Image 1 (cartoon, rainbow, N blue to C red):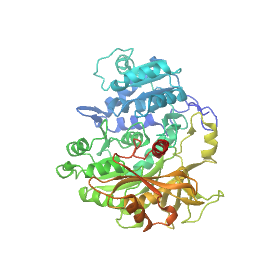
Image 2: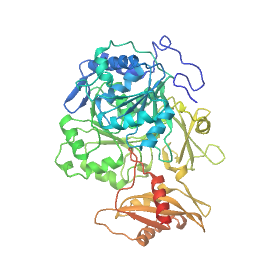
Image 3: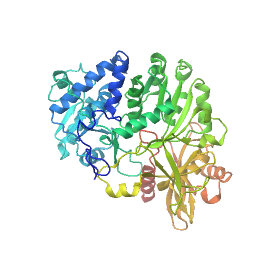
Image 4: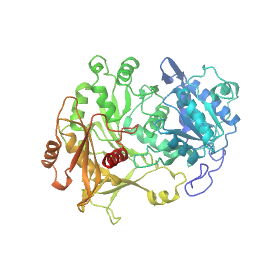
Length: 537
């Protein structure tokens, strides 16, 4: 097991004196921004705006309230909340108090949330009003949770000091920063669980600050920028964007959830210059009627990830957002940002668009073949990476740590290759690879062909059992509104572009969107489960 107060090698990290001048500290991001831009707007949600100076004071007082509640160094504090300014303050208030933040995915089912709480050993659980009843139920069931507390959306919200850290914070004296940093754990972030039950990824102060520095190399922002914070803050994209706003001292414009009409209105009225989105969000924006009614020319850059964007979708986006540069990023919670496809690489009609980009400075990437040897350019294998931004490991999972984190390298479980120019291509998840008749079929390759069909809105390719082939290729497809295509037509389309063994043996049509996690990845395990249930019926 990894400890919140220790390094990956088991050495105790030490106390305040050791980290008094720590170079890598998430609280240092906040204090630097407050010193440089005390009167600049740090975070805004609706009509509420908080300056960097006021935010630093609020964070220190919240940290004092957490210390009053008995928070000890290295203890975990869980939060169950959608995006809001109180959550933003907790990102540094918990580390300031010496604790480790555990942001919980609000879309998880109650048993999954309970498992995360028990696994993390969180003693305190903070929740916004909408999730407070559930938080209290979880606190009653979780053996580790002593108190479920209200997370105020504003310091002006009335509440009981016993049930609201924000109210207690107004009465407490702000303590000094507890001085945690470098290899101390800062955030315990549970993965989205696309392949199983969520795992807790230990992000240290060093890995978070390093990821922010890498992010800034991609985002290229300044204190004058307004950053749209609509990606969930319980995921790495939202976390990095939030800490990144502190790094540059810009303004974080918070939206509780994604609504394309509200996003377009916010971009225009708040002069948003930067946004982190997933391709599904980009599609929703450019296909919304308001895209032609709103002046969104201020949006200088969109960073997107979770999945590549198709050429047709990029053409559509560039048509409606001609003043916006696009950056594609590839990474994982365990690794931060690994590679980026910069605006100059987004050349429509070029093969490079299918790439994840070049590895960022300070990031090493190698491709390992089936024998564990480095593969030459153009040869497919497992993507492995190492950098100072790597997570410390998985919480309470020594066997998986030994398998995934080896000799300083993260074995991502993704299949890909590097070309002669150093561009990384992500082919598939290793667990999504289909072995049909002894041949490897990479589902992403088939999905790209299906998605190019004019009638297809989205697709996913999974394996189904086959007596003849072991596994057979099966497609799940949602057609565009008003479009028509048969199973035979889609299979024939695939045969025009793919070897026969790669083509689907069957197609299931859906009228509703494919299930996705909050960062846009299709939940193939849900599709497999549904197919099994349909077969059983």
